[in-house]
Image (cartoon, rainbow, N blue to C red; front, side):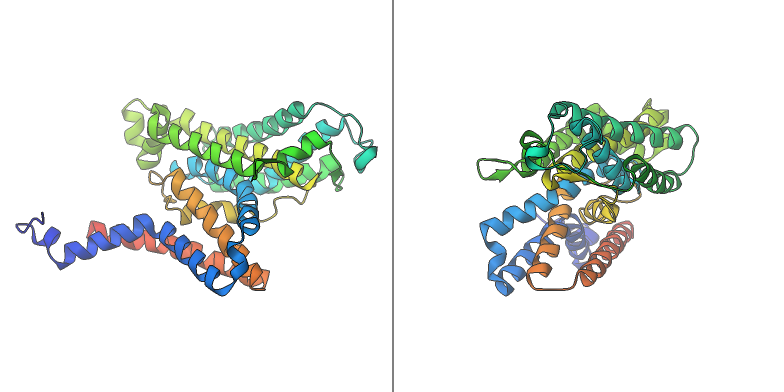
Length: 342
């Protein structure tokens, strides 16, 4: 029942605020549905099951990293190094898988036994977590702003990848390795399954554990959280380890999908990742956001790119549109917040 005694809540202004609040909370899903409808009408091939699976497969790599980035941005941090870290971790995992660089270009029957796939996976994840831990240490102990730390990481990790690989790729893996990027369980690609399992686990951690509450508390008000016993430094450090883990996992799946790892992998990936998180409703100022929103944001970017490709729209225009949508999402979030405070 409408509260007539409160003119703000029950009057036109109250209804306008409610509409703005609803649009702010659900803008990403609404826009995603609208995009699907538009592309389905303009390009009949868009809804073909093979195309839908292709969209999901493409989204899974950036989506995994976006899940980790959600933890970072929820604490009011940022990580610009994720693309470079994907390249470095992928190369290390590939090196372990091949057992060295002697047959780095061998494919097919020329592929040697190398090392078990699990060791390659652990190597990639270990590199991602170690680099994330190093950046988290610089943020929490040296008190260097996250933007500066991870901007340095963007350059340093890319340089390390080039140095490690000598500028060349490592190609041709065993069938067991490639299965993680190219295989299917039923009709669903393995990377898609990994992505959604990771999303569910991350959602549970953020929404149903004390650690998740601490992440939101640090992003909402770090000083208040520390005064209430939240280990702010430890939580802040840990989110960079989490995004590093996701970079390692994504690099393993990406190299398995392409059957190749190279130092130029992940160029520009940080744009898609940050855009997915912000478009999904996570505030760059911390404390507000969800894994569900991030998944929707990643799907939105994937659908937009795929639909534009099917319609033969230039890749340059695609980048422009994604950039504009990112700015619009942040602007709308700020506008909605200001209207709610007014």
